[in-house]
Every structure is written in structure tokens, then in C-alpha cells.
Image (cartoon, rainbow, N blue to C red; front, side, top):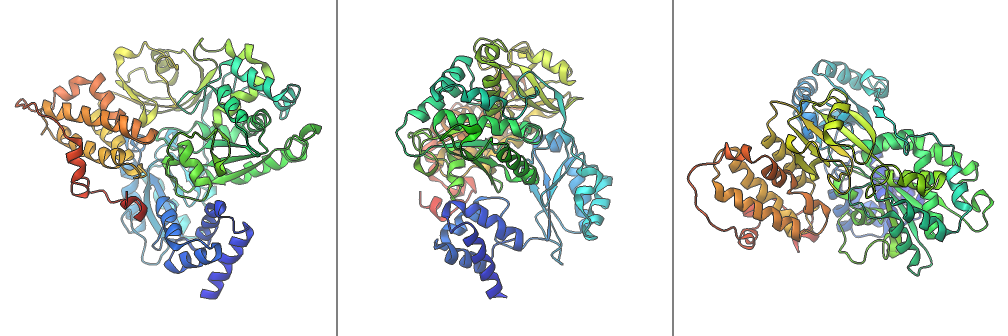
Length: 593
């Protein structure tokens, strides 16, 4: 058995040329075969790849889809994000426990089924939802669970269950991403220009990145092209992991051709011959369809050598599946993961356009950004810049969930007011809106006349509505718990600070806090935002801080009247280490920091 085990792993390693940057693919194939990683398995992988065991173990421990203890043949990952809890995930969880006979976090004695939680699987518009191995099921009710578990036990095809019929849920199409366009149209238009002219057209359009930061796309491409290098890369970031975000799910299922079109144009513009799509592990069920579309583009001469007979314009695309790590949505962490490492953010500078994938200039763009770039090539910069506002050109895709009658994906023009959007999605009675997902801001009704745009309320795409009767403080705590769980653990402000913030916030919710604790938590939050290494830590305090700013009455109602004005010493708190946080480092490497 051990020889067969070692032989299989050796063949998988040979399939990928023993390339350490393809370690994720190797681990995914081994995981699909055995379901978990024993020390024997880790040893065989290390021998086949000539990589120390500690590095293999470190990578496995980083990703939620990998386990170092046995799991069931079928793994049920029930999403327990804030929206899922709002929609009844707790009741569904109890139904699963009753039907399976074990608690969440456990495996049945016969090794058939494991129950576990997932932070978000990109299905908040159809909550409660779950992944059964790699098959998504949505709109779950407790009464559905018995039939699902029975089908699993009978080894039936889960994808044929009614709950696995996933709705596209595209509620509103706009003129950019979801307008019709024939494959190859935008590439043909781009190839009539020089690469420099393509970049100038993108700059003229005022296209800004749709992932949240809003950096001008043309400037990013120009910077990447101008770095002297023998090789460059294009990376499409399709690792949306923010709870309440699922727009990329719809784009990749309905407009993958447009995404690949945008990547090809970007490759031509910056002088790259290779592109990689980093697709979040929760979307693995899309993989075969995406590969089919890529093959169709190759047959049409839209990928490969001398694209559309343009001499020396070569461009190839491959898809890299992730394994469950929210932090890999951050571009430098994503690049680390692509290189076969744990997805820890890099120090910047240098930025990816200077030294990215394989230490070469790399342009990392969001799925939606690449779609917009392709449409600009088709219709022109002047056309694009007339949509939206002067500072926020074009449209924005919003993932809408929570307390609204019409959840789903909306393509809206920048500049729409929150109030108008409330009516569009059926959330007129909302008492609050979380614009930008957990990392965004909690908006009160007195700001509903403000706009969704880069110059006002900027968002990567998630909008969650809270209706009357919702306990906003509890939901802000749940968002903060998400950041504590998803911190990569690399830097102290994020690793320790978020845990301390959660600990202090518990005092508020429990009515044990005075104004001193309120002020201390504000100072702590600002420290985390200022000193954290990457965007996760820099935005992790937002749920609490923006709720304090916009909903002060919630805090006034729970603080104790007795007060003492003191100071919060972050350095002193950090020195207490694990005794304060209760948080262990993710790895031996982290423990030595």
C-alpha cells in the first residue's frame, strides 16, 4: 500500500515536472485521491519534489481545504457568514447534525461524512448554502437536509439534487460587463493599435481597478510594460472571498470569454506571453467549463502562437485553483500562492508590476476590470468615460444580499445613490447597509442620499442590507471574528490586534464597557489600520469603527455610566502574547517572528 501511495505521488509530481511553483496543483490532486495528508503522504511529497517536509506541512496548514487528520469521503461545508446566519444557517446546521449523527467539526465513525463550517462560499444570494465536496447547494431549509444526507449515503449524484440548481441571479445587466460581444471582437480592435496605443486608450477611459483599491488600470499596465525584463505576466484575480461577494461567480459562469479577452489584451499591452487565472477553491465546479472555453478560443486563434495572425504575439492562459484562503485575494499573497507557497502578503515595495510572479513584472487585475478593458477596446474610451461620473467612469457590479427582496448581482452606473439602490433591490426598510462587505463601512439611513462611487462610497462589490430588528452590534462582532480567523498571522498588529479588538468588543456587547473601553477600542483600531502589513489588517477594524462612527446610539445604550479616562498601551498588550489573545501562530515560521 505504501509503495502504491509513493508511486501515485511520484507520478503526480512528474506530471507537473516537479515544478515547485505547481505545488498547489500537486497537493490538490493528492488531496482528491486521499482526502487528507498523513505524515507519510507529506514525506512522499517532499521526496518527490525535493522539498523539506516542514515547507509542505506549512503550506497544507495554511489552506482550509487541506487537512492533516482523516476526513470523511464526503465533506459538507456549511457557510456560516453573517448573511447565512441571518437566513437560518443555525437551523440548517442542527438538521445536518441530527441527520448525520455527529457535530460540526466531527466525522462519522465510518469515515463517510465530515461536517464543517466555511466562512463564505460565494452563495450569499442563495443562503443558507453549502459545498458538498465541490458541489454547491443553496436556498437550504432544515427539511431539505434529510434528502441530501440520504442521497450522500446512497452515493447518488449530488449535482442532480434540486438544491444544487444554482441560480445565476443576474438581476440587472448594464452596458459594460453584461452587454453582448462576440469572442475576438475586442482583441481584433486592440491588434489594430500598438501596445502603447492600447495603454493610452485605457488611460483615456479612466478605468480604475474594480477590486476595491481603484488604482488606474492604464497606469498599472504602463508601469508593468516599462520595467525592463525578459518576461512578464498577467494574473487575473478571481479569488473573491469577502463574505457577501459573489459577482465574480456570475461573471466567470456567464462572461468567461470576456474575462479571457481582457487578459489577452492586457498581455498584448504589457508584453506578456503568459496569463494565469487564480480561481478560488470554492469555484472548482466551474473548472471544466472554463477549460472548454479556453480550448474554443485556441481553436479560433484567439490564444496560442501568432494570435489572429499577428506575428510574434503569443499568449497562453492557465487556471490555478486555490484551496480556501481569504487572504489570497490580496495580490501579493495570491502571487505567493501561485509560486507554491503559503499565501502570506509580501512587503511592498517592490510592487508586483516591478517584481511579481517569479520575480518578474506582473499586472494583477480583478475579473471585472479585465471585462471592462475588453469592452473599452471594442467601444472606445470616449464611450466608456461617458458612463458613470467624471471621477468614476463606467459601471460597477454589486453583489447584493441580506434583508432585501431581490438579492443577486446588479450592474449599475457609478453615481447611483444608496437610496435609489435600496428601491432597486427591495431593501427600502433597511436600517443599515454594509457597503464594501466586512471590510467596508456600515452606513446609516442619514447617509442613504450619498453615492456609490470612488469619490464617495467605494466598494469592491459587496452590499449587505440589515432590516428592522437586526442586532447590528452582534453582526459587527461576527464580521470581526471573520478577520481574526482569516488573518494570515504574519504581522503582529493584525494577528494580535484583531483578537484584542474582539476581546474588548465583547465587553461592549455584554454591557461591561465604559467610555474608556470605547475610546481604547477606537485607538486600537487605528493602530491596526496604520501598522498592518496588508489590506486585511488595514480594513479589519472597519466593522466596529464605522458602526461606532455612524451608530453612536447603539453604544450609548450599552455602556456603563461609571467611567475612568485611561490610556491603552498596545505594546504592553502585545507583550502578553498568547496569554491575551489565545491565538496560536499558524506555523513554525510565524512563531519565530
